[in-house]
Length: 223
Image 1 (cartoon, rainbow, N blue to C red):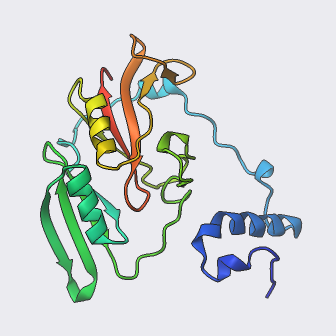
Image 2 (spheres, one colour; image 1 turned 120 degrees about the horizontal axis):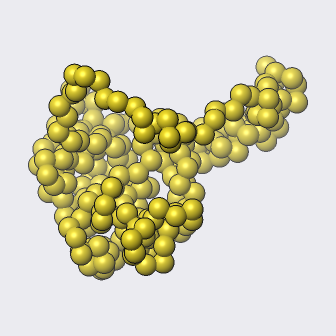
């Protein structure tokens, strides 16, 4: 059994230090010749958009009608319910008590037949910022590190009616929700424009839920 200096907090279950501990363990394994250096690992080439545009759907297409619900995990269902209902205005429409004291499953109406859902489990794993959700560095969401692990659910974006984005942002701020500035996402190398023009596909702002969930309100102009 080896003790790796600087990584003991990982073994004592302090998830806030997980990323640092993983880096420390990886560096030790590389030093001992037990782990291939990152530079030696095969690189995944960037996506070739030209090739993807030529893809064709199967002859028998599945008739999907949008997202039914997206399920997240709450540490405190009472706090989550108050945020979603009172801050975001999504009614609580269904509650499920899981068998054998296994937890709860709540559904909130987010419009057009779609629900935002939450699980609460009594023994849920602790939060993992930077892995399961974007890092919460106590700044507004647009300034945070938004990278998450492969296969994770990075953020949820809701469509708002045309012309209502600024008003919705003002409303959330009045309700005590910290919001990012409005960003204008554009087909330009920088990714954004200072104000809407013909290159802008949608405008949006970001905010966080009570457990650090990364949320977005979006006004779409074109695909």
